[in-house]
Length: 184
Image (cartoon, rainbow, N blue to C red; front, side, top):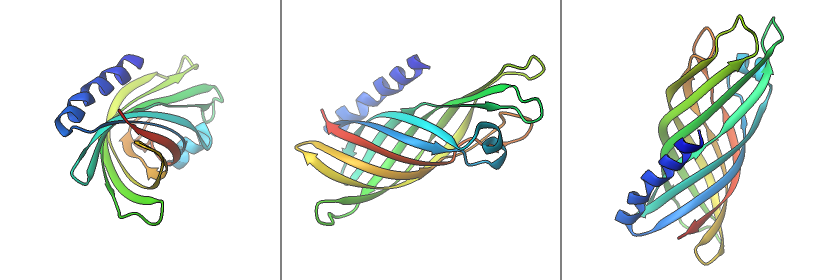
């Protein structure tokens, strides 16, 4: 999984070179389980760190991100430990609006692949390791904190239809995140 994050970030570097303005991003968010059955198994949610690299192309900001989510719970009925983990690797586009005082609101949309796995302690349940297409609309607000650096707060919802159990489920859900963006 670590190798996938490194490869994704390295692939984003040509985007910045073409655009001439390379920036990085780190955020820490809390992802809430969106599907009610997954919420029953894994609980409410878990922390989700995300790294990204991007560029500006005119007014649009393009960003390649990779995050990591992992949440453990108990299987329904058997009450044995199960863990859902995933890495969403997304290309995102953001449109910042005009400054509102010292803040800048933005909207964005990301799409890409969600590499997910389900590990079960029960010998009767099969482990799963697959990928699914996902997309994630986002709204946020950004505040400059120093030359070339800004803090942001965002709200997003990941839609990714996957089959971690016997039927399709949305393995994503609502995420509230805070982070830093900085120019290189």
